[in-house]
Amino acid sequence: MDKPIVRSARPEDVKQLFEFVVDLADYERAPEAVVSTSDMLRQALFPTGTSPHLWAHVVIDPADPKRLAGGAIWHLNFSTWEGQYGIYVEDLYVRPEFRGNGHGRALLAILAKICLERGYKRLQWSVLDWNEPSVDFYRGLGAKPLEEWIGYRLEGNDLTGLASTGRGL
Image (cartoon, rainbow, N blue to C red):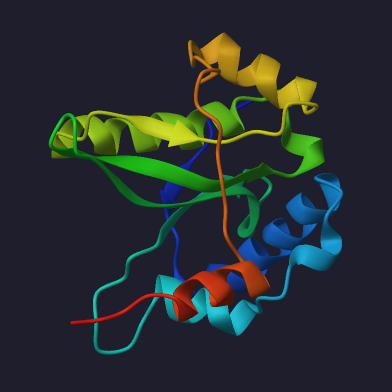
C-alpha cells in the first residue's frame, strides 16, 4: 500500500469530516450527543471575516482522491507551566476499512511535525478507557496516559447555574 497522503482540510471536505464526527460518536456509544451540524463545523473551520480557532487535516483515500480515508480535527491549548502552546486533537477518525494501514499514524505525524515547526511542546488527546484498540495504537506510538489527571466538564444546567453566580467588573 502507498504511503498515506495527508493535507489540510478544505471546505469541500467538511461534509465527510462531519460524517466522521457522527460515526465517532456512534462508536463511542453517544450518538445522541452530536447536536452540531455540518454547517456549524464549516463555520468553525472556515469562518468568514476572522481567523479560525479550529483546524483539520485529512488523509486521502488512495483509490478515490475525492473521498477521505480519515481526518483529525484539532485546536490549540496552552501550558502555563511551559509557557507554550500545544495541539489538542478533538477528533481522530479513520474509516474502518483503512485502519491498520498507517492512516492514523500519518495524521498524528503531521500534527507532531506542526508542533515541532511552531515550537509547541505537546500533542494531546483523550481516549475512552474501554477503547482498547485506540489505547493500544496510542501506546504503540509512545504516547503515555495522563493517569493522574482526571478530566472534568461543566455543561447544560450546571454550566448555566455556575455562570449565573458570577459577577463581572
